[in-house]
Image (cartoon, rainbow, N blue to C red; front, side, top):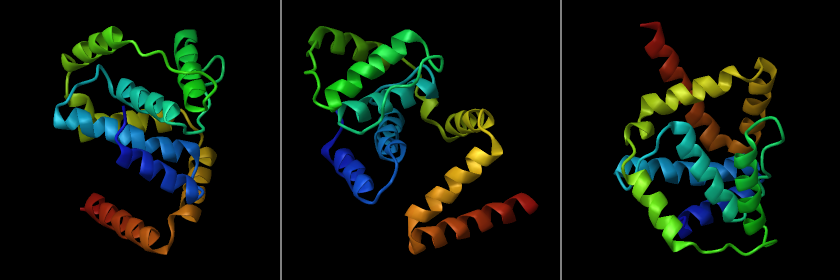
Length: 167
């Protein structure tokens, strides 16, 4: 169950006109934080992201399940179920025994999946599958919803990164 604070932040993103994936990002970030704090682990960074997205769907973020051919059938079915729960089209069946079992398994998984390097590798791998135009369009859209203060901070950070790379 996601914390109320995370749900509040996601709703704030929605009011700000940000995309569903940005709203879901709050849940993914919370999941990564849980792994970093050692509450549980994950087999891979992809799994941690998937758990966050599932929680977002169940919390009502308007993030439809992936299209056919992008992921396996079981993943789509699971995402569809979570999405319907979040949209109020079905009630979630509480399965305490399954929840306990999943938690037990996750506790045994590695915590290194929440590390900076693991997340960086995952981000680069995901970006590789997208075209330059797609990445550019996403950046352009992000700059529209950021606001002057955050945009300025991002520009300063980028300048620092470039300076560090030049050395």
